[in-house]
Amino acid sequence: MVASIPQAMYAVIATGGKQEKVAEGQQVTVELLNVDDGAEVSFVPVLVVDGDKVLAGSAVASASVTGRVLGTTKGPKVNGFTYKRRTNQRRRYGHRQNYSLVEITSIKA
Image (tube, one colour):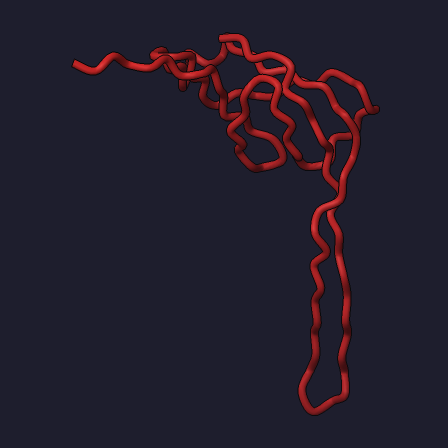
């Protein structure tokens, strides 16, 4: 018989239309949050796993995930090019998305 190794606590949070798996003490980049640096933010947990116990659905309503905003960062530059054939109409553009860097401070089930 193999003894089960206890898993560390982690959560899946929803922010900016995306879901991210986070653990306590982890730094994650999320869509830009309009808050000051050092501010506390709370995220909506979708799933919380604490060892053998898994909270999902309506049971996760009592859970909370909080973090501290460390600052803003920029993502990779995306270069684009549009053109219309036979008309000498061309356009180059670039875009670089801003993100918030957040450190997860606590996960409570």
